[in-house]
Image (cartoon, rainbow, N blue to C red; front, side, top):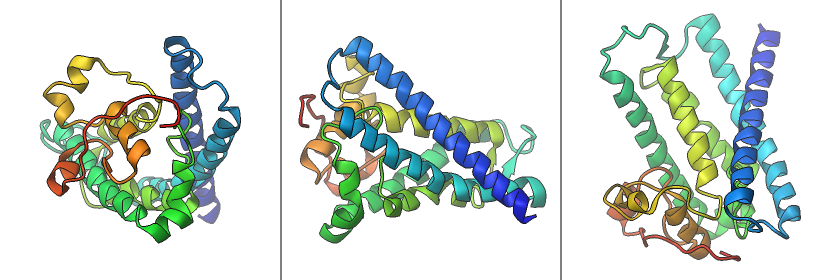
Length: 241
């Protein structure tokens, strides 16, 4: 049993690490094509981002691997395979529930991370990326990585979700983490500056957080920032931001 748990944790760590490398490499390549020279002179920073991110992959992968083993071997969690186990309308609603719960946890832990002591001990690692790049999505100090690593493994014990819907959540989590740090806006202006953009977070919104620190703490949605008065709108894209 112990060996099976260790192998599951190792496998999940590899999955998280490879997923990060593929996603970040893909959007770094897109940056080279769409914004040539944007990352020029940042080779040392990028190597540091990759190192921190691969360490974070293990911190994310180990609890996920243990929970995955428990789900398959012991029937832990509320993850289900039969699409008809719950009403079909629950599929999209469960995705939204996970994103909303994750966003809430992220907002409040992220805001706490900006208190002087947690920032100095942990969160400064992430903000050392100036400007952030597509490789910075998981560039966290281990203590900060741990706060993020517990979210999904906890939610699968609380909120039922189909395995396919969970894959959608993890995909959105990866893509938003990478694209919000690229240093340029991937999404069209009509979305970012339109009605949907008033509630959704994209690179333009998160960029301002990296410029001013004390604002725009959300991950997917601007709801908590708006409710708590920490939303300062969209940022600008210039070197050093």
